[in-house]
Length: 242
Length: 269
Image (cartoon, rainbow over all chains, first blue to last red; front, side, top):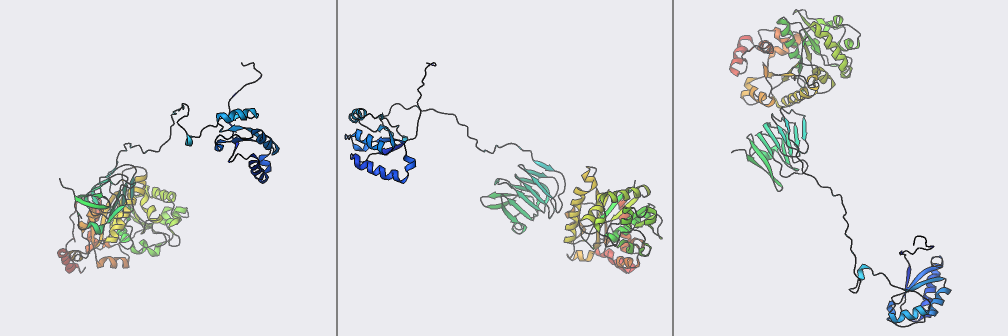
């Protein structure tokens, strides 16, 4: 049929639908005329569908309706929501009968089989992939004013951390020497991070933003080998003994 | 090639210039050709301690800028053979020291001397950084009190991270701890940190302990390095320090009150 002069294809359009509330055609058309006056350009030769669902099968004068609508300069495309009985009258009046596509909200059990297509949709979701990052290991003394940050890993220092020095790690911190400066573990929010040191005399220890200054460390493991953990919102210090 | 030794501390007033003068003089007494450079541009003091203030014509900045040559600028010490002083400029500030300028002067001096002692200014700014940048060894002068110890710790950190040797990945600067103004009786009373305390905090090898002594002030005022006062406890402690710097093992003296008491009685402090 490729050599045909015409081609028929289905397509969808958005049309205005006039819902008839009463079988009084004259009254209805007067109401529509008032509406058109508010926006004459919008309705000029506008295609319109008349829905007669609310008439409950009552037969109205469709010929009169068609004529009155034409007088108002709107083009009736057809009638929807008609019963079988009404349909024959409608066709006789020279109007088309339309079957409204049901919207999903008022789907009825009498609907024909519905075809559902499943599509594979890939949605990008940001997931932090746990990957292994080797510990940062330093064999040196960290002096006042020096700062070390181990990003995404543990920090191991074979040496001491002086007053005024700062060691920071996203993971745990291990110091095989005195800790006199500041140690900040779990800097990116790891609450399971710990701080281990050979001699705890820290200015400040912090795990995931919870901190103790040297004052609070005095009565626990001050001057001894120990480690700091975070239990809920509070830190606790434990002596390193096996 | 000369060995470049920086005498530094971070904190001011702990005895850097006194120690530079004593150590430089001590090395010269041992027969090494030594020059002491005053890096404290704008606050020149070394010339006074060395008693050469009336002989300063040109200075370090002149030498860097090429206004004078080494022979014109260096001041020869009249007491000790082979000892020279390179004075700082009093009219300029520390920014007059450029890394290239300092390097050129040190290279030139390096050919003629065995030891170059750099007397660092206090602080951790340009002047102090220039003094320590080219060092092979560092003598960190510390008083037995907490603020001095912390500042020394800071300087040790800078030596380990901002010196030429650290930047070029060479063997690190050899660090020595020199404890000055040590008063054993006050240590015993708990008013002063002990040698052990300071050594433990700084974790640096001790090279000498200089007792607090009347001789130091006297030496400064007469413009004679205290090491030349061989009768004084401080002078002897500096002589011991020189021995240790040269790699000889010498027992520590003046660490306890009792011994100090004897010296006080013998030599009148």
